[in-house]
Amino acid sequence: MSKIQMTTPIVELDGDEMTRVLWQWIKDILIIPYIDLKSEYYDLGLPYRDETNDKVTVDAAEAIKKYGVGVKCATITPNAQRVEEYNLKEMWKSPNGTVRAILDGTVFREPVIVNGIKPVVSNWEKPIIIARHAYGDVYKNVEFKVNEGETAELVVTDKEGNERRQTILNFKNSGGIVQGLHNIDASIESFARACFEYALDKKQDLWFSSKDTISKTYDHRFKDIFAEIYENEYKEKFEKIGIEYFYTLIDDAVARVIRSKGGYIWACKNYDGDVMSDMLATAFGSLAMMTSVLVSPDGKYEYEAAHGTVTRHYYRYRDGEETSTNPVATIFAWTGALRKRGSLDGIDALVEYADKMEAATIKTIEDGIMTKDLVALSTVENKKGVNSKEFLLAIKETFDNM
Image (cartoon, one colour):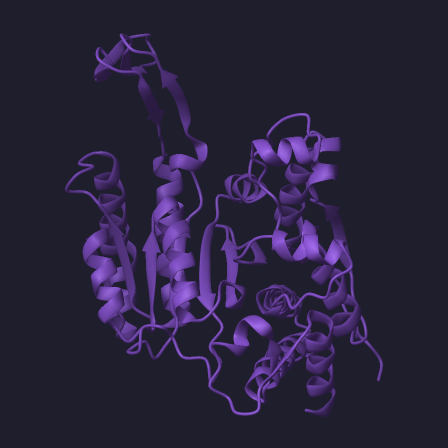
């Protein structure tokens, strides 16, 4: 068979450690045999980010703005130990945070549902999609270690130089820490519209939660912007197709989520979404089964797995040991990007390939061949745990026979 031809490249953001190894295997086994892959390649591996003073991350984000679709491998966000391990010039910021800020995007995360792997929460019957705001809050914070006897203040200066001040705390009896967070109306508005549009596209209810009873200015601003945009722009559209938007406090939302059957979109502020997406992924089965897509207000898309670089497996792989790392979320990152590229460019064969590859991946697991992390979760009879490359080859065989 001739390979599927692409007309526009996707932006390829390579990454680190075990996921970097899987990245190449997925391309070699599941993509290149079927597609004449056109990609604009950026190496976001930590050594090259350090070599370019992280300029490569900015360049990759700008390329996504140009071409419209990107696919990203998991990357290391260095801490002090990583700075020493990789002999870095400095502790570079999260590549995900940089890309999200440049695209001003919203992250939507959805678990891959497979028969035989039941959610920990027994009443969940449908996926729960997390919509995570991708700007500001703790990810763009400023912070200080404060000495005993010092006073921390919040100061805002207007255009004319006039100041507004508010004391945070007089650390008269003990040293401590202080942190400053921010967000901007324009980004919150983009977040709200992205969530409403995604809900319309998925035809699913949208929830939004924060803690406005405690954060009466910061969190309340999110609540007000969502409410205003909904009333003015989306209420009629939602009612027309029979879906609902509602706001509730974050603690109430958590209780509702646990009691629900699933099948809706849950919009969260940046940190809440970071934490809750991992909780949902684990409760649905595995973080390696959680897909993620960053959507910008002007319709740019970046697909990735929701998990990290699987460091523990990488060290074993580097030492020549066999690993059984689950590649499903990374496969779905590639298929998501290729499907979107095919949809935008009118290449039906590319869309069909993505649909078929995802179906082949799920069928392989349901037929009993899976990575070892899923063996303990699956109720399928005669299941077999295999290593990563064996699993990819099994998917290819399933795909070829469908």
